[in-house]
Image 1 (cartoon, rainbow, N blue to C red):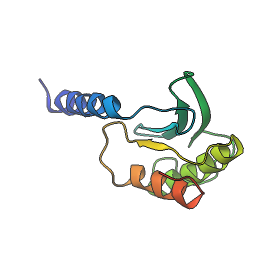
Image 2 (cartoon, rainbow, N blue to C red):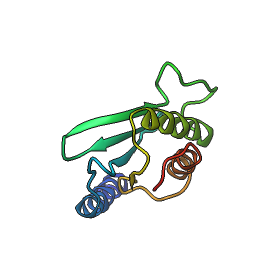
Image 3 (tube, one colour):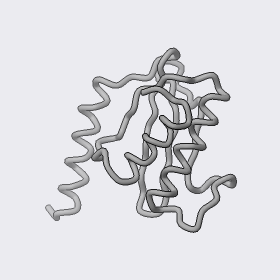
Image 4 (cartoon, one colour):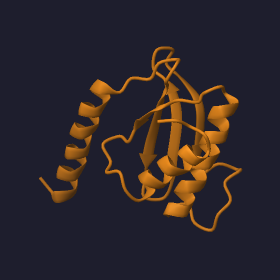
Length: 120
Protein backbone atom coordinates (compact mmCIF):
# COMPACT_ATOMS: atom_id res chain seq x y z
CA UNK A 1 0.00 0.00 0.00
CA UNK A 2 1.03 3.55 -0.50
CA UNK A 3 1.98 5.81 2.37
CA UNK A 4 -1.11 7.99 1.91
CA UNK A 5 -3.57 5.12 2.06
CA UNK A 6 -1.81 3.75 5.17
CA UNK A 7 -2.27 7.16 6.81
CA UNK A 8 -5.97 7.22 5.92
CA UNK A 9 -6.50 3.69 7.22
CA UNK A 10 -4.75 4.49 10.53
CA UNK A 11 -6.92 7.59 10.97
CA UNK A 12 -10.09 5.59 10.27
CA UNK A 13 -9.02 3.02 12.85
CA UNK A 14 -8.39 5.74 15.46
CA UNK A 15 -11.76 7.26 14.64
CA UNK A 16 -13.59 3.97 15.18
CA UNK A 17 -11.87 3.57 18.54
CA UNK A 18 -12.89 7.06 19.62
CA UNK A 19 -16.48 6.64 18.48
CA UNK A 20 -16.88 3.59 20.72
CA UNK A 21 -16.49 5.90 23.70
CA UNK A 22 -18.00 9.17 22.44
CA UNK A 23 -21.77 9.26 21.93
CA UNK A 24 -23.87 12.41 21.69
CA UNK A 25 -26.92 12.60 23.95
CA UNK A 26 -29.57 15.31 24.16
CA UNK A 27 -27.93 16.58 27.38
CA UNK A 28 -24.41 16.51 25.96
CA UNK A 29 -24.24 16.28 22.16
CA UNK A 30 -21.11 15.47 20.18
CA UNK A 31 -19.04 18.21 18.53
CA UNK A 32 -17.65 16.57 15.41
CA UNK A 33 -14.82 18.00 13.30
CA UNK A 34 -14.06 17.36 9.64
CA UNK A 35 -10.97 18.84 8.04
CA UNK A 36 -10.48 18.74 4.30
CA UNK A 37 -7.52 20.21 2.45
CA UNK A 38 -9.47 23.35 1.58
CA UNK A 39 -12.17 23.81 4.25
CA UNK A 40 -12.96 23.11 7.90
CA UNK A 41 -16.35 21.82 9.08
CA UNK A 42 -17.80 21.38 12.57
CA UNK A 43 -21.20 20.28 13.78
CA UNK A 44 -22.99 19.50 17.04
CA UNK A 45 -24.84 16.19 16.76
CA UNK A 46 -27.44 14.46 18.92
CA UNK A 47 -26.78 10.77 18.17
CA UNK A 48 -29.90 9.55 19.99
CA UNK A 49 -32.24 11.52 17.73
CA UNK A 50 -29.85 11.31 14.78
CA UNK A 51 -29.93 15.02 13.98
CA UNK A 52 -27.56 17.94 13.73
CA UNK A 53 -28.30 20.70 16.22
CA UNK A 54 -25.81 23.30 14.95
CA UNK A 55 -23.21 23.44 12.19
CA UNK A 56 -20.58 25.82 10.86
CA UNK A 57 -17.92 25.67 8.19
CA UNK A 58 -15.47 27.84 6.35
CA UNK A 59 -17.82 27.62 3.35
CA UNK A 60 -20.69 29.43 5.12
CA UNK A 61 -21.99 32.75 3.86
CA UNK A 62 -21.32 34.35 7.27
CA UNK A 63 -17.69 33.26 7.17
CA UNK A 64 -15.39 36.19 6.58
CA UNK A 65 -11.69 35.74 6.14
CA UNK A 66 -8.97 35.83 3.51
CA UNK A 67 -8.28 32.09 3.73
CA UNK A 68 -10.52 29.09 4.34
CA UNK A 69 -7.81 26.64 5.33
CA UNK A 70 -5.64 28.13 8.07
CA UNK A 71 -5.88 28.24 11.88
CA UNK A 72 -7.50 31.67 11.85
CA UNK A 73 -10.29 30.31 9.65
CA UNK A 74 -10.72 27.36 12.01
CA UNK A 75 -10.98 29.72 14.97
CA UNK A 76 -13.68 31.68 13.16
CA UNK A 77 -15.58 28.44 12.50
CA UNK A 78 -15.31 27.53 16.20
CA UNK A 79 -16.72 30.91 17.21
CA UNK A 80 -19.60 30.62 14.71
CA UNK A 81 -20.38 27.11 15.92
CA UNK A 82 -20.42 28.20 19.58
CA UNK A 83 -22.87 31.02 18.78
CA UNK A 84 -25.19 28.71 16.86
CA UNK A 85 -25.01 25.98 19.50
CA UNK A 86 -25.88 28.44 22.28
CA UNK A 87 -28.85 29.66 20.21
CA UNK A 88 -29.97 26.02 19.93
CA UNK A 89 -29.75 25.64 23.71
CA UNK A 90 -26.56 23.59 23.85
CA UNK A 91 -23.94 24.51 26.45
CA UNK A 92 -22.06 21.24 27.06
CA UNK A 93 -20.60 19.02 24.34
CA UNK A 94 -18.33 16.00 23.90
CA UNK A 95 -15.43 16.72 21.58
CA UNK A 96 -15.02 14.25 18.69
CA UNK A 97 -11.78 15.02 16.88
CA UNK A 98 -12.44 12.25 14.31
CA UNK A 99 -9.09 10.54 14.76
CA UNK A 100 -7.13 13.73 14.06
CA UNK A 101 -4.33 14.96 16.29
CA UNK A 102 -5.24 17.74 18.69
CA UNK A 103 -3.15 20.52 17.19
CA UNK A 104 -3.39 23.12 14.44
CA UNK A 105 -6.85 23.64 12.99
CA UNK A 106 -8.53 21.08 15.27
CA UNK A 107 -7.11 22.79 18.36
CA UNK A 108 -8.10 26.21 17.01
CA UNK A 109 -11.74 25.13 16.61
CA UNK A 110 -11.84 23.66 20.11
CA UNK A 111 -10.30 26.69 21.81
CA UNK A 112 -12.55 29.14 19.93
CA UNK A 113 -15.64 27.09 20.83
CA UNK A 114 -14.58 27.14 24.49
CA UNK A 115 -14.10 30.91 24.37
CA UNK A 116 -17.51 31.19 22.72
CA UNK A 117 -19.18 29.54 25.73
CA UNK A 118 -19.25 25.79 25.07
CA UNK A 119 -18.08 23.48 27.85
CA UNK A 120 -16.15 20.33 26.92
